[in-house]
Amino acid sequence: MRDAFAREPRWDPRAFPPADRAPRAAQTVRMLLDPQGYALGLRRRLGPVFSARVYPYRAALVCAADATTNRAVLTDHRRFVGGEATALLAPALGAGSLICTPPPHHLPHRRLLLPPFAGARMAGWEGRVRELVRAALPDLPTGRAVPVRPWAQRLTLEVVLRVIFGLRDPARIAVFRRTLTAFLGAGNVATLFLPGPLRRDVGRLSPGGRFARLRAGVRELVRDEIAARRLAPDRDDRDDVLSLLLAAQEAGPGDARLLDELTGLVLAGHETTATTIAWTLHLLAHHPAERDDLVADLDAGSDRVLRAVVRESGRLHPAVYNAMRTAAHDTELGGHPVPGHAFVAALFPVTHLDPELWPRPHAFRPQRHLNRDRDRDRDPEPYALTPFGGGLRRCIGVPLAELEIATALREILAVAVPEPAGPPERARLVAVTLVPGRGGRVTLRRRSRARSSP
Ligand code: HEM
Image (cartoon, rainbow, N blue to C red; front, side, top):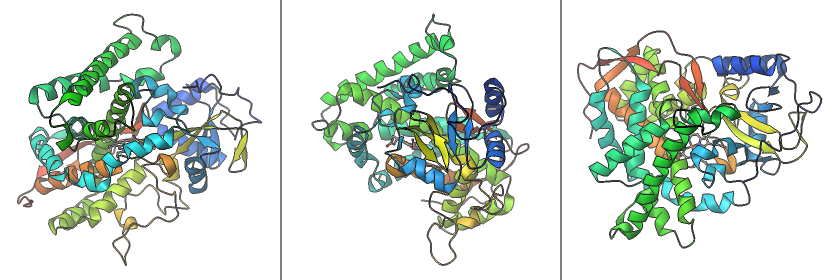
């Protein structure tokens, strides 16, 4: 993979969209302290296309923050190229994973990965995902404050182990759980955003050394699993992602790429889905009228309000902060110059709060997604709401993510309702995920009469 950072152009205010005058270090700190608020402030002052002069970009990150420019960045693949900017995350995701693959290899690669994630196939997992949620519910206590995100992270990891890896043996599941939890845990992947010298592996205790050791553990385990499953007699009867990819092997990736692919899927799918579950419950706790509407609709056997609630949660708090591209050549965005090889981001949490698209943008109003006439989603404009991205690189995990989120909410709200456990939380940026600052705390109150469900 070409090093996107080596080709980044130097900062020149005349060659980039408008920027804040503050030094790069000050802008970086402000962005880290309040990623959503700081970017919204820049958009208000500088317009929908601006340059954020933040680390680790040597020049700037060009940000697109309205529906028109969001669409351009996500869909104009000739001008805005995907797969190169994610090089920073390649040591974690795997350089051969779909997310890190630039054109022309991206599309054929994506075609291989789409069938295992098709909606109909994922629907077949519904019963098993429900069982996993039910098994996890006793770890979500009622009657006292609890941060939902760590619980949801454990749940989504369990789903990954079954749906992606197809693990069945409890001992093997335990080893995977331990190894992946350590790798995904406290700030490990965020090591990749540290300045160069701190990223280096200079011994077991250095952040870089710790990252390398944990990563080696994951890769060894996954490599062994691929080898074992190649020999497994029941391989063709399985419907997990690994088995399906192995079955497509003749035309598909070699084992080295499969290894990258699986690591990439764990990282892309686990944290994002857990974060969305946590934000949604947190928002419901702080909006009792909307929460009660949802509970009543679910009790009546409908998913209509649930879908609107999840869309509204993804609008206010998209789990993924931005989609990254690099400019293929000197170009323009929203009437501003963008130099070739500059980093360009579709900034979802700002586009989603555009008052011209979304009246009272900061209010949690699931009803804005309910079409009065038909049971269909309604957006004010295409590309006004893109928590899963768009275009040729739109998230392929949507059917799995939606299944997990809907099942978790349905099962939790059948037995308990969330209430506030403190003030509404501000978003914090962990690598590229926008997480609730204190884990999405709620107090779950047990319902006097639980809803009976299948
Ligand atoms: C709520 C949960 C999720 C959110 C918010 C989310 C968000 C996103 C976004 C915004 C992108 C586009 C990035 C871009 O354009 O550069 C993306 C891509 C991707 N996502 Fe997800 N995702 C979620 C869950 C999942 C799951 C469960 C999986 C699979 C296990 C997954 C796998 C992927 C992959 C492989 C890509 C790369 C697609 C490509 O480059 O063609 N995601 N996701």
